[in-house]
Length: 302
Image (cartoon, rainbow, N blue to C red; front, side, top):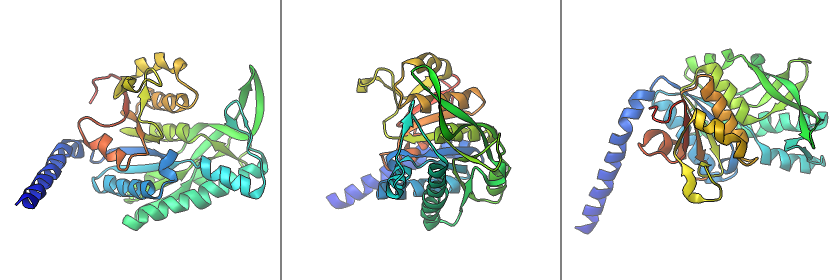
């Protein structure tokens, strides 16, 4: 009898979860979500599989899903394998022409292909794209600031233009675009630049008029007073985040800057969530409480 009662209780709990999700499923159908894939979710086999399942679930809920990925750990490993030293200046990777060849190969030929295959194991919707394709991402070279002075760091840039046609064509045909963050150099169109995946995802979300930008990371969300774990916030307005940015550490600041930029330029909400938890995206999007930090224009915005 107790076994039957336990099964009934489990079934009722599952039904309750589905009922809770129904308003959100109804609201988000037909909307566009841009998902920045990174952090530990890229290296754990279980988390990679869960991420792919989540992407296909969102797709079947009628959401237009675009995945944008980086690949820092994989790039580091390949550079070491081929004997190219990884050097960072002002927190940015120094990317020589040889290093850029490796970055391009790893992002478009390894990380992207693996992610496309993972998604397509669940359903054959994913199609890989590079920021080079159809001139999707165009970037301008940037310098790093070291001791107050600009320093050349090679093939590294900031996204200055997004042409989303290749992405929208795939979405219109029922596909899931998976975008590698390699961009065309606006000053030298035969050259490519390595761009930050967070800022690229933000720019793509803006260009698509996305409802949500969701960034997976290796922390639970935004802390107002790190390392005080009780200072984790579930929602913050754009103006509150703007005031907080100068006090954030160097690891979280670029992600929150990307989130703020997206919301400032018309994206409905930006979310920073813990990619170390399986199915964290679904918990954030389809439950009333969520599990990460949501950035929106006004804190009480739906």
